[in-house]
Image (cartoon, rainbow, N blue to C red; front, side):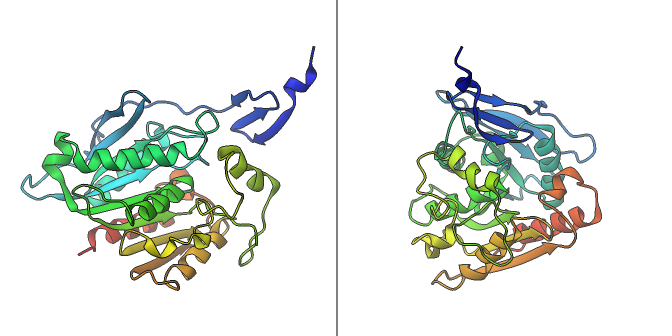
Length: 308
């Protein structure tokens, strides 16, 4: 028996193992929670299939409508999870979107892109772009009847924030039918780079993760993961950006680096910054009712409702 087949070449505990023979073991799978009308917030949700041949889908959210004549901002949300875990249908993101949609009074599309390593990057980026195109031209009744296509935002946390940025870059040079992207919200964004920035300390798992999810990458200075290194950085297809970091999150240095460099290379927009003191990576998902999670949600909601 060839024991080398059981050799682990990459491990992302407690979520994923990749073996030498190419097998992948997803240790912790996300629970599916069905769409519903949330009894606390009054937010309704439903699932839609965007691309039947690939299974690409999304969960739509509609706040309790008090004035059917008033169109609401549209939020396209990309979940986090290092590109390998979580889904748009997990309890974590279903509950968070219910709260965010109620607080901000927006219509939302939570994208369920395909995950690595079974579907390595750039598949998640292509799925996300397909979802944007679908949202910009669909006749789906919630979007058609309630969403204001002149007030469109993209947001995400961790890997989802990475996706939101990359979609805004692509929107800067590709047309989206009917869409005007006002801004993006990057919460604890997953970015990296070869050379450390600020007080950044890289880890072996962190270095190997990017290669595991994007086998064709050129490395940690790939523009997909090091946006400041991207020649198209100044072409970001929106005029407002909110970058949110957490004080004891190892990714905070890259978030700050992004914020500090965005306006230095010709991008003509407004970038805002928020740091949650004493908090770690995506704390707001695990403790959504804590004071700092509430502060973060209010800031994100105000950002989406303050656009021209």
